[in-house]
Image: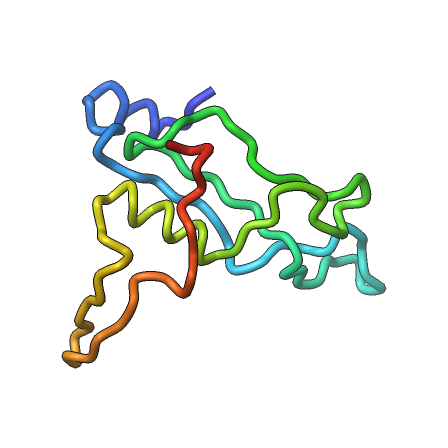
Length: 117
């Protein structure tokens, strides 16, 4: 089931040219800590992306049954951004200028996630 935002973008014909990305900066531990909370867990981070011509309805990668270790399709944050840049038509081989006029690469060695194209 689509969220209201995705449904609205789709109905207006804007979802193919708009990318919606949902993520945090890290995941949470699969177990509860001593203060009944969950600590930072950078080993795996959930991400949801939609639109921009990317293939929808896919789950890529998984953790083991305890949620502690990556079991399949280990990806890097750079891979996510390489995917987004490719979907936006940004040439990752080209160096770009930042606001201070310094050259930089679009990603730090990432590769687009082929299963999304």
